[in-house]
Image 1: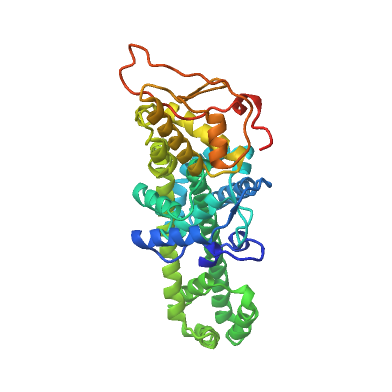
Image 2: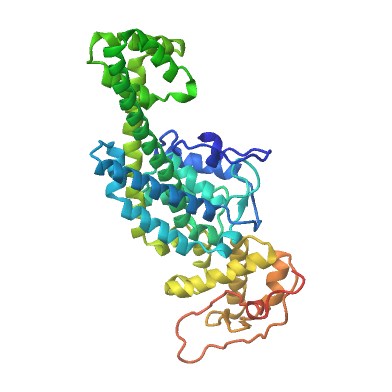
Amino acid sequence: MADLFRSRSEKAKPALYSEDKPIRDELFSAERLEQFARELAAQHKAIKKKGRNRLLPRLEDNGRKLVAAYRSLVEAVRQGDAVSPAAEWLLDNFHIVEEQLREIRQDLPKGYYRELPKLADGELADYPRIYAVALGLIAHTDSRLDPVTLRRFISAYQSVSPLSIGELWAVAISLRLALVENLRRLATQIVRWRDERAEADKFADKLLEVATLQPAELVSVTVERLAKPDKIRRAFVVQLTQRLREQDTEVMPVFDWIERQLASQGTNIEQVIHAEHQSQAAAQITVGNTIDSMRLLSTLDWRDFFESVSLIDPLLGQDPAGVYSKMEFASRDRYRHVIERISKRTNKGEVEIARATVDLARRAAAKEGVGYQVTGVSCRVSVSGIRLWEALPSRLNFEKCDQVEVKNLTPGPRRLTPDIRYLPYFKYLSSGGCNNV
């Protein structure tokens, strides 16, 4: 599983979709998770590439397979068959899974996916970087998420490689997609185990019948069924062993033959049984963690989470007048959207733009004193003593924008507190963009 997150130069079919093993790796402590996040950030090479949406088709496929697994387990229960504890978890909480599928379909428009930075190489090449981050987190927490761990993980990642505003907003949906992917793998595994146990029961019935009528044929019947490696699985062997163990001694040749086959592979029946029980227990824990994490994602205040991990907000909060941090969320979000759009138009980092803009606001405040505004209204840039449409492009080394109306706002008699709002609202917000950028 660790290879899933390791950068590679050659492009290959993503291991993510070429196997059905649960997304589960070594369980990390909080400190080790932060270290892993920094390592992951150093490995990731992100590029701006639109490309086709790879996650929505996978979501639909996962949704169909989850529903099929659910119906298969429901039918097993209806027929009176025993199901595993992991299957019971899935059956009792499938309404939560359906809710997650609906929310993902609603919250991941195709256009939004295209804007997310993609990985340039590795086994997840062309997939959104933030999705790879989500996979890494759930793999090393066994799908057990909590707000504190999530914040620390994202912050640690950004200490090496900042995530964009769009990526931070996509954390929630990326985690949902990763959890659905993992649960689909687990559900497929659970149903396969049940099918294998059912096949073992049928074969045990056949062996018991042969032992009674034609005992000399026991070994040949066993060899015919179990000799091909692709025809036998661990759950089958465990169920068959448990069914035959307390039967008549006539079936002992079957045990002897199975033991010899396992010995040639360096194991024995007891080890196989122990490993299968461990797998069943691990599946139960992971399914439970996944369901609990899905519940958590539906209750978290994602606006609060965004601002707690954003690298932009602390910078904008350094404005000379201290206005930004006092704004309501919608107003702060409006300023962040401007930075996001400037970044896309100029191919400059959002953090760089935010830092340069605040620096310019400080210069304006130092030159003209408090009480002046640097704010965007409609298509205008109102500045205090500084030409932002000239200064910001020069500071960030990109071409000038269209001419923008400049207006000094002299503080009136009622303006008793500093009010310097610094976000330049370039004319491209309504006219379509900067020239020659």
